[in-house]
Amino acid sequence: MTTATAAPPELDCPRCGSPVARGQEYCLECGGRLPLDGDDAVRSSSSWLWPVLVALVVAALATAGVVAYRVATEGGDPELVATTDQPAVIPTTAPPELSTTTSAGPPTTAPPPATTTPPSPPPQNRVVSWPDGRNGYTVVLASLPETGGRPAAVAKARAALRAGLPQVGVLRSGDYSSLHPGYLVVFSGVYPTNAAAQKAVGTATDAGYQAYIRPITQ
Image (cartoon, rainbow, N blue to C red; front, side, top):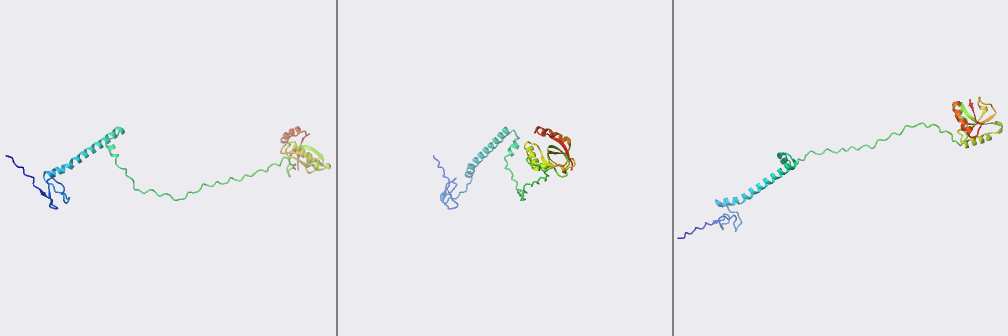
């Protein structure tokens, strides 16, 4: 004797009243979600629960692997390594305002103090005169009678300049108390002492002059 299995009772969509099968999640007519009860609800909930649990386990294993790798490579504390993944906190403090003060230009260099330049000696190619109010010693190169005229004395002075003698000039002997009057004296150098003039006598002698020293007193 064959026992007929009773067909599962059909359900109706609570939204549009169309017949739906047991375990069906959505109505084929209106598309509304159907309420589940009993074993259908358990099966429906377990259908998404297992994938979620598997995903959580995979994520936990991946995190543990990252922590173990950092501990092995960096030699740090696992707790410290795990906390390094926290995002950096960016300070919200506004940056200090830039100074708008205009920088001063380079300091000006003060000009060097003025120095007094001593008077330059007279050119070597010019016949000079004995300095006014000066007493001293000189090297006499020639003593010519005043009656022969000054041009002859100046010519001898220029010849001495060409020979390289220093400070060559012409003076009138009558203007100085230490000399006999009536002569034009061709001299070389103005020296403060006899010893200083003595050093210049050898130079004049080497140039071919019968030179000698005379004091010059005003």
